[in-house]
Length: 395
Image (cartoon, rainbow, N blue to C red):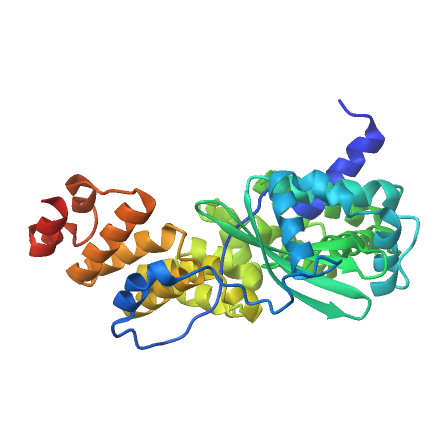
């Protein structure tokens, strides 16, 4: 058992962050896909992964492209240690004071910012430790602060983080998961303001904390109990919604999804934080709409294009699925996942020449070889194995 002081810091961090990191993606459009598959696959060997960041490759100074790429490489190996190299309490507290001038410097209730901030930031980095690929994709300056954006990935998921840096101190002062509204600093302040407000009773404050605990532990009965004790104003607190939506995922219990539906989806929601909810409801049309709220430099990332490919394939919109599969390959021709989708799309579209070309790329470049039994399990696979293209592949 931890001592209560440090246990409280850890509990507060969990209330802010939750326990899961979701990799999900963005945006849609209608296009003409004539001959796109052949163009993409036949030009594979001449393609290199491209960066959309225009900056001198020789610049290694703070906030340069190479600086952020080095940060990404270090974070992929040791996220918490990398954070520690670039984090200090003083600039982080100054950032909170800058965006919330009336915020108490005493910290969160009885826990000082000096204890709470590093612990919360560490928890965030621990959550993303399983995403071993980090890629710097964009940066922009806003006053004395620099926003740097990173795509984090594994073989089957992506996430997108924004790190805010103090230009003078050259330290990280905030982290935000891009699908959601609240960064760490904003979430801590939102909770602090509820707990220190004279407008709420002690029962409401205790119920607020218990509501957040119930979300974190996915205990719906307790959540329903404590949420009902909150005033209508507290029930509509945006932070509760943002925190709850972080845990909405495919496979989540129906009671949680029904609650979200009753509270916030009487009209279609367009913010990306609702993506997981719509995905869990198999509402792919609205899922696509929510992803359109992401910034363009994220919407054009390979992880987003893969997500779009999967969505449109589920919606049986083969032309759009094929377009985004091609866009995925153009974004990163050395990632295998887009080719798996290309194969499924080609078989479903009865494009056996495209399927054969994709199978050759998977075998020759990635050492991935499909057996006839594998293909027979896929939609359209049986007909492909009987075709001349199938016979050419299987011999």
